[in-house]
Length: 192
Image (tube, rainbow, N blue to C red; front, side):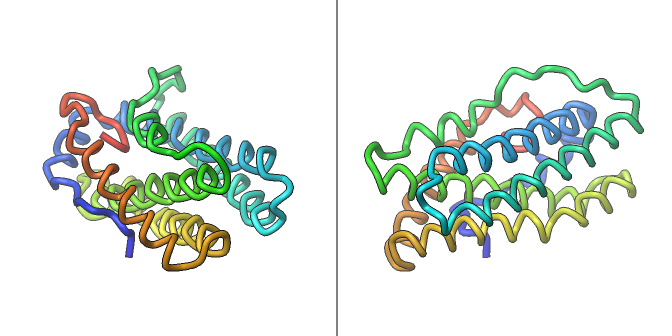
């Protein structure tokens, strides 16, 4: 269960098919950002040892996925270039509460929702893309994305208890659904 409050319209895949190069580039950037976030959390919360090993393993896996996407870009002769940041994560982070432990709780849960949305979108790609190689690539990433989502939720539950974690996750999932609903339809990104 991915804890999302909305589902992606299947027509999203049709838009992706028309701008596949852009989606693959965006996906590479998403993996890089996910690794960076894990490392940032390690530094910010180094006094919370229950986070450190899982986040370290996550950072390495996200970097492996980044390298996988770089290889795919190379294979398709798509240059890795700078992209303007997608507003998605920034919009979600605006709802992170100030003060600890609320800030950590919300940050972990926002990360869980980003992973959940990635997983949901990758499932659509694995089932509906016309490119068989990419369907297989995305099928191969599904379990990792789902595990990342569950891991962030589990860490939050260790911090504040299962009930409080699930309650706040539901609140943030509603916000995430609204952010997705407002996303520009003309952009082809993993989270728009």
